Length: 387
Ligand code: 13P
Ligand code: SF4
Image (cartoon, rainbow, N blue to C red; front, side):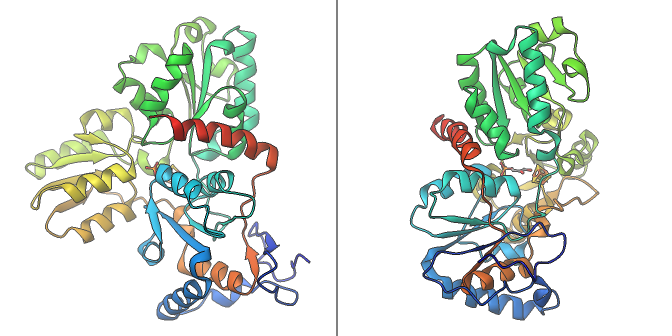
């Protein structure tokens, strides 16, 4: 029995009955409309109660960009790399409610066992950068590289921020996944095996990491999927070492080099700390660059009185500011830009999936098809083994 009658229209919702030990409610999932106008105190109390009832079978994972009203309910938090590792390690839990975005929940599903269920509270929590590369345009690029006789020398590397079928694409071709915390180790691993790398979908992470490894801009080519050969001269493609897909994160493009200049002029002793999805001109001016986990560790270990201007998603920056009142933490832009898709995971959706689960109904299950999962797992496992 798969109840469908009360699904919110256009939500992309999947309702899947759970394992038999919890009885299915007669006929339907609890509708989301019942959660839309609840007071914050009631949401909090009911989330806490549902979690307690679900006990140790439930693991609530949260990415650092989540809003505080959700983040405080996390069992474990992390950047995309740590969350992938945690999902792979926690074979003891039955349900993983993933408060992050779609590609992260997909990776968790790929890395967990068949008896484990991954739930994304709102299916609309996607990632605009991940959407900038799809399987058919990457296959077209690969076919063009094959036609030029280059593909055999190219390692396909996908950023974690990509759909599972692109991870599978890499897995099938000897390629690998990377995150912002291991991109340099993964690129080193790749260049030990192949002469060139096709890196998608984030040009900035690829460019920043390549430069850190000593690869010059003249050895990189930008691949625009809307054009033949990515808009490149075949000769330029032959000599390039790093082929960078033309994708980006709009949240991190908000930071500009003049913002760095402004903070350096106005806040004596400030240190600039940015995520590697920022443009190269910002990264070049920064003091420190790293993943969300690195950013947290850096501020946590910093001395009281230290001053920071941080270029990453605003919920994380504000949480750091509030957690360390004896450090001065600024957001590195006059314009506040949050990740609107991460923000879709709100207490209402969290409560909705938890209470449904308690009633024996799984809503918003993330399920990667078996064949895709098999090859995506190969690419993710390669990443987890890279040191
Ligand atoms: P992390 O790998 O630092 O978690 O970043 C993921 C992300 O989506 C950043 O925009
Ligand atoms: Fe995607 Fe950017 Fe949001 Fe990260 S911050 S999930 S890259 S849109």
